[in-house]
Amino acid sequence: MIKQYFTELKLDDEVTLSEGLQQLVEEAESAFRSEFIEVTHIVKHDDQHYTVVVNIDFDLEDGDEEEGEEEEEEEEEEEEGEGGSKKEE
Image (cartoon, rainbow, N blue to C red; front, side):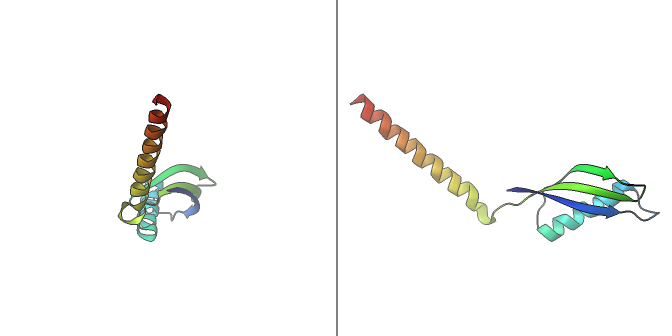
């Protein structure tokens, strides 16, 4: 599941925007335990203050979501198959 977050980024005089964004992404990976962080927008307020919009992909543990989706698809296919065979009879 992907969620969108807004955060403020304040740069020190010695830190570039790229370095600040890299640090922000690393902190988000650690805090949210996700390796899938996407910076989607950067809004500059002045030379040191930015609003950053990030998308974070949260995976369910042990692929629970994928297994559930596969089961639903199999059930739908079975229902379609049953419906099709009834029409043929």
